[in-house]
Length: 522
Ligand SMILES: Cc1cc2nc3c(=O)[nH]c(=O)nc-3n(C[C@H](O)[C@H](O)[C@H](O)COP(=O)(O)OP(=O)(O)OC[C@H]3O[C@@H](n4cnc5c(N)ncnc54)[C@H](O)[C@@H]3O)c2cc1C
Image 1 (cartoon, rainbow, N blue to C red):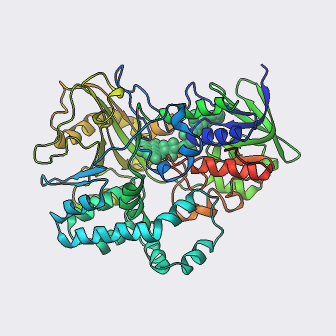
Image 2 (cartoon, helix red, strand yellow):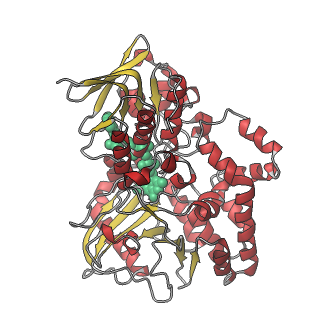
Image 3 (cartoon, rainbow, N blue to C red):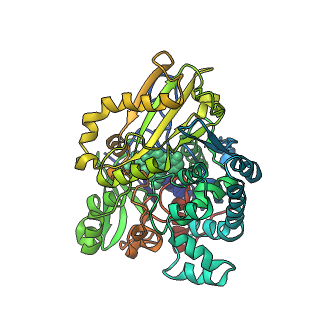
């Protein structure tokens, strides 16, 4: 079979690969993306998982992170059909005692909600969000939309800024420590902590205290908790249109098998069905580092330490996600009053939340583990037949269940029933009559969905301090360049990591362009 030649060949049409491709094509480079599956998007997709006409996001749902950066505007994605919905309220928590707490886009309105539980905590919430606005927000955004800072650089920068030492102190703390420091009342603590743990960090994970200001509060208020109308897939689809508009293209059902390296320089790619694609200027891999460095490159071109490091990457928590097609809108227990809220957390009690994470560490499940519920159709009627709804409920779990990932296969059927029971405790109208279709994804299903989710890690490569910033994915290749000339890496395994931020894609593209002496045209 024949292939073709391009300036740039990008591997993987996840949102990061596509964003990199769109920037490179916009700069005038002939850019071709190869995608293994018959649909683009990777972890940013939408599928009929339960019943015809019900469009679920199997992986990412919220596109909050990408709202913080310049990508949507720079690539003009609205022009290519992308429209974001910004739900308000942002999210709510419902508690076993029948109470609920709502966070609105307005910080003041959210503080008034908190006041019902503790006036002191309401004041603390205002203080916390003001601290984010004044001292963290701009450093946070700038750090994400640029290659990782060199060791020490962030500290030097913070040292010169007002409150810089306080930012360092909070950053070194765990989310739990920060929440306990700011708030005194348990519902408030749970509400802010559960939101801060979005994406899978542990509550007591040192070095992640700023998540309380970012994901847990300030970033949501600043950038919104956005979802694309029509589902997550709309982002990659708009990127494909933008790419084609600049003369680039995507080939689906084109699985990269081998990266051609000659004299230490990446020259192209061979697909599983034997097609050969020549890359005249660069190969950009938007895949997991293990795929690229353990499977696709002849190891004689690689440093043995790098290969060994990628054999031992650290992974974080995975998820169990229940997807339902419903004949009517979810109705929470009457006392909650959150029926119009798209995203609800069920943090349970503080002892339960902490016990659930402690059990995860041991490879166990916990019966009253916290979970979260999304019902996008409350604000987006395009995802289900008229008057009907999609709902998903997810909780963080270990990959090595009882020390054996295969255990997930054995308990999957039972799990489906159990997850529905858990949801029904809080949303009683989830019954046999209203459930028109159901599916559950275990960590094994998540891993099988997309090779980026190695060992079910929803962030691609564990977010632990030893794999962040200039250490991600490895200290020797943390700036999107690799040890092989003309081979670049993007995607969730590169800085700043997982989520729908697009930052790895943009940062990588700007690095490639810089090396080629080019710039993106306006
Ligand atoms: C259950 C779950 C829930 C999540 N929820 C959220 C959320 O709400 N918000 C959020 O911001 N993030 C969320 N995430 C994380 C987010 O989905 C990922 O961080 C993000 O999708 C990674 O994007 P990427 O472009 O780096 O990689 P991917 O999207 O994984 O793209 C990689 C692409 O490469 C393709 N590919 C693989 N192998 C090959 C090959 N050999 N040749 C060619 N192509 C290949 C894959 O098919 C895929 O299309 C969630 C993840 C999971 C699993």
